[in-house]
Image (cartoon, rainbow, N blue to C red; front, side, top):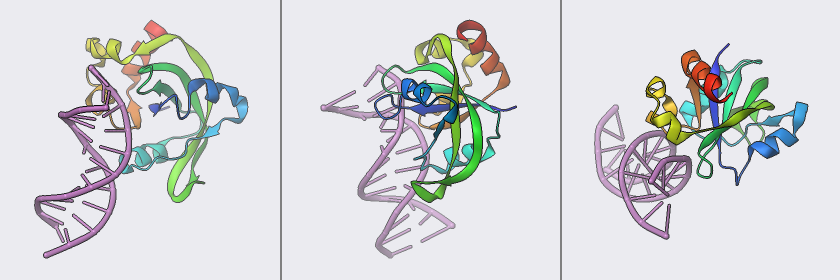
Length: 134
DNA sequence: GCCAACGTTGGC
DNA sequence: GCCAACGTTGGC
């Protein structure tokens, strides 16, 4: 089961809003970047993703699960999206600052390609973050 | 609010 | 198909 990280500015769509959607979840629309789209297309139902607050917060705050995979973005059918539901909050936010100073995470896409809004996370990275903050 | 990094667009 | 110009993202 693959692991991912999805970013959202809390002003636009926050973890709290995602949680409020409950089991119904929310379509992850508005991705307009080919690399990010390819990652969305690779997601399968049951895959888990960290929910990261960019700009304000700059931390992983929760975990989502894919509940519907690879369908056309209703806001622009040329692009793809998937549907996520929030599964649980992190025990504590795991910040970008902390990721940067953690040797185990030095290859994270979050650090090396900070602009990519949908990115893969390795199992090792996932396990480490879950161990310290999950 | 600034600016660096990067992705996309469009003229040639 | 190259590359300069432009737009956007996101950390600081």
